[in-house]
Image 1 (spheres, rainbow, N blue to C red):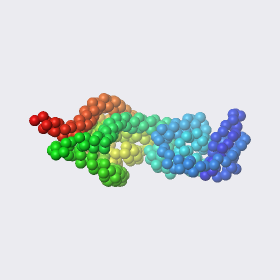
Image 2: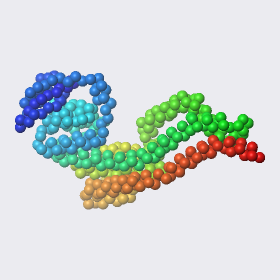
Image 3: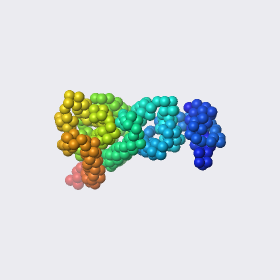
Length: 402
């Protein structure tokens, strides 16, 4: 859809300018007048192929959706009509892809489609939880409150993911650096030292392995690169289907050190999402069906599906969650108390806060714990390579001395 730049005055006589998408120039002027603007000038903006490409591949981050939610809540609370709020956000949004989507949503709402249904058309941007909360806000007349809850939920989820990334970032960097050092030694150092070995010197097994690896990488590097690409693509394809997701889900919760962090993060995400949905007036069964997949864990999703089936038979949530064997006792006990007192949403929020804090504390201490361990491992690898290189030279010198 064409883009138009405009200059206008608002109701207070303050000059405003910006860009707006419309079918044609007259349509753009009509939309600006509906907002209460006095249009001074409208000019067409030529959309470059670079912008089209950037718009297509631009990634929408959690922060962008959080900003959208907060801004929309603020404008609705100020009494601004929903359509005008959306068009304003369309103009203010920096993310090109999200700006285009918000523009489409604004046009759909202007055409009579509800906001929740308009959002549902973009599942890759707005999660089922987001859409369900907006739908509850539309039905209950509490759109502002729902948007505030959503923005808080998204911010807490972002913090949780950032803590997980912080825990895995340092080990990843160190491992990559170690691989780089090993590759550099195999490519450049080992071939130089091979020339120093006296002819006929018997080579120890570690040295033979080092030379074989060095020759393989130097002379058949293309095979190794193709193999690496094939492995990476194969893993991505495998992890993209249900079997791969289930396998990785089973492995990651059993990993030493990191498994406990992943599990606490998943429980915190489930508790926070379920708490937010229940506080928004979403029925328990629907809230469970949304909260399970929102964690990204196949185990939790399966457990929640079984819990939903049991709820329809009249059984309690706590008993069904305990039967799954995945959730910790603290969550089970708090859910049981919440069912008895009618404060399930508030108590789930407390559980989420506890596990979010646990993840934050654990990840902060993990770096200081892993640093010496990883340095020792890297030292042993590089030291072992150096010893393997020098062994033939030591052997030759010792033989000459005799």
